[in-house]
Length: 211
Image (cartoon, rainbow, N blue to C red; front, side, top):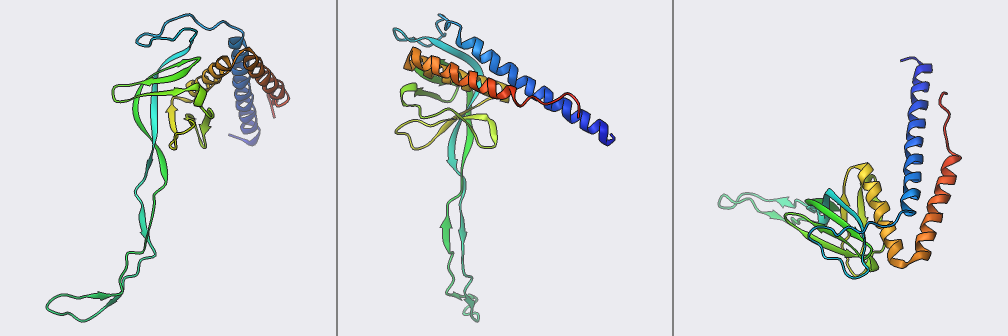
């Protein structure tokens, strides 16, 4: 591929990526204006006033686990002559133990139901609930856009949900929409204004079709 064709291909790719984001933002704004569904999710009893926002599967449940640590700074010691077939080492030490990094690990795959009160995960191995009132944020993991972190007040470890990239974006939108409805009409209006501003800024970044 010559330089001209390479630039044209890259420009077309950039435009397609921009268009996908533009379509997604417009979809979100349309969804905010729609009434929440009146469906009753199978297997989950909604409380009075609680409304369904999302019922999706398959979604993975991830929990943080500490990877195996290592010993660092150890000293082999000094080897002395053999005594009865044993060669002792004087002054040897294993050094200090360094904890391994905390990593997210997929623990189960199942169904996620988001309502105006909570997020519920149910799978063959695990069941989890995150109350929206205690949810501190809804953000993708750094370098892993398919993973959605769910930090909760009073819980040291941060659980996460994982889906393909497109489903993860929709999941985060639905959770934020549920949070807004949980907080009331003013919060819903504020979330709509936030997305509208994001769409306006996005318009200023539209690439050209050719280089």
